[in-house]
Length: 288
Image (cartoon, rainbow, N blue to C red):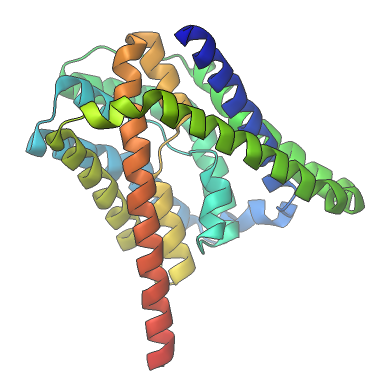
């Protein structure tokens, strides 16, 4: 029964993600894709933050807090998995610069074919565990959940802008309903994972998110929209890719208890961060 529920959840989450990525693509002009052409230094700083400094921060947190081995491995896997698909939708809603988010997100998705196996191998050596994934498996996950639907949406918007205006909202509503339904089922069927996690593990997860947000915020340009975008992109991890790596290398009963609490912690801290940034921006505008 659990395997049936898991299969339904995986299908539902993938279907809603593809739908919402296609809808998001229909909001993206092709010109957004050339954002880094005039700002290559920003691209390098962004890549440094997301795929170099965040994994280093994860190791720092693990050695500092010393959570259980399962949690340490879970954090290491998450650190190797950038470009969470839904952040392409959520970051602009949180005030992130949409051109920056689009270009960075797609760049991270493409580069993950190389960076994820390399970072995973380095993290495994540092923490003395064994885990691997082939670039082909990563390509399947990232292309289906991010690259293909977004690119199709961008092309569809460019070719059929009138049709796009008609179908965008209904498709977005359908995707959001499926997504909320799947998340509700996950919380109802797996809430015990939140209760069984010890305090040390929660501290490690929270520190990783906070430090990752700080890395992105510090390395970003001074514009609030770009700081928000890089901070959230740095802290967000691709749950589908992380789950794929975990399920290929470990039993599911070890993968889910780490992934679900981390997503819960990330959601809470990222919301607090966005609210704080909005209040600070409003305060500064009043002072000006």
